[in-house]
Image (cartoon, rainbow, N blue to C red; front, top):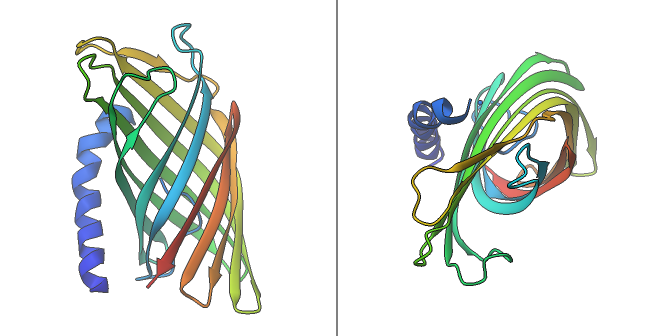
Length: 229
């Protein structure tokens, strides 16, 4: 079963890269996994960014998604995420949104010792809010995060704790489709340099609990939990 899920993950990543990367340039962030480790769980992310356009200004949104991470080898970890949900925007009470979320990422470990490591991570995620009402006010947001990560590991009782962080490039794009339009109003962020830092705890070698924060314009927390196989 473990190898089958890894096979699905690998092919999902291979198929998704050509489809999505041209639309936005290269999300479950965190330290790399050991070789052949597989982790499945849920993550919830909050976003807050300043957009260049007066039409949008400051934007705030949040999203939850299931994720799958796999350590292809000691030096590379792949991840995919996705979800479908129903959401309600406060400013659009009479609009019926179905939310589709998808993401992918890769974390590479460039240098590693017993207690200390250095790597790079690139993650892309996309949210599409499909308006099922007659108004057709669709919304789309895209996020690209690229970071240099340093990490350290220590143990406490039956828990392994990894602290990690480093500078990051964080880019967000918003697209809004007004009233049946197929041409979106596009808004982009400009203050895209910040940092990411977090903590991942693995209990009894199986239960993964983590939290991290991305800073660009504002502090944006992300929380999650999963099971490792």
